[in-house]
Length: 214
Image 1: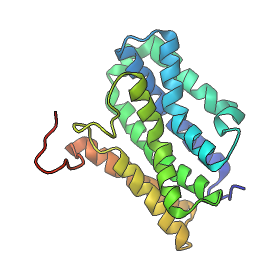
Image 2 (image 1 turned 90 degrees about the horizontal axis):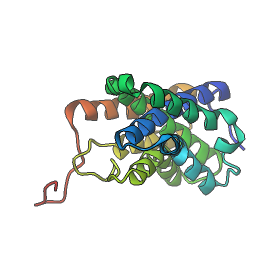
Image 3 (image 1 turned 90 degrees about the vertical axis):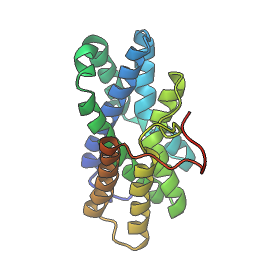
Image 4 (image 1 turned 45 degrees about the horizontal axis):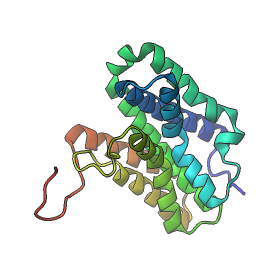
């Protein structure tokens, strides 16, 4: 049912890069929360695969790719092992991890939207599912770790907005018939750049009038 909008091998490599980056962020949070080895692994897997699992279940792509492609399931395991043994060094390169987290955000919002469109979803639904693919794992990670998800925290830089922008651009390109590997890459780049700029300049979503962060 999937249309070869991008080379499947290239898309899989990009997916795995994003999965590894998200898994690192989940495992590092588990270490900061003093979780044991099992907790580190669980948080790494949930962060890396949660959004994609939700998307696949919604569109009816079952069993989800995380359970049909062994690389999708084992990559977070590798990331968890890396963090378990070398987390002091990784903690000092948090900016490096955040950069790849932004890359994963951009890649996943585009890949999620494309897959939803290929399964016949309405463009608006594809936008929502693309964003869910990108941010779902991080939200599940924060909830399991007992934190307010980044996309809901008033003091957190914008997270959902870059994913929505990338997903929306994919749907617009698809509707206008100009969705190609190049234009889909530009959509991913848009999400990545907006997220990195938000981290650099502290951009946050506006609060309700007359309120302030707790």
